[in-house]
Length: 130
Image (cartoon, rainbow, N blue to C red):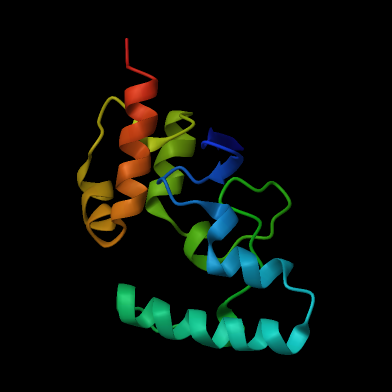
């Protein structure tokens, strides 16, 4: 797992720059109250449709431990993610460390996720490519 140091804590960061610790899908995964978890998954399904124009039912919002999880608990969007597949194939810890940053695969995604883009820029600035 790639961890990113913020001012007062370390966070779990996906290849694309999303913070898995604050991801609603991950938060639903660790929510112990099943009724609250169900409501969270319903909200997530609506948000995925609104943001990504992809229809997902609440039942399809499966448990996820982050895109780098080796336990097999991955949300379908993470499991099928082309960005994740590319990073794994290239054996890089973050898209911000890729020599092809920002590639076409990442460009559209980052337009929808500006916080992830900022995080990748910070990772890139802190780890200049040789």
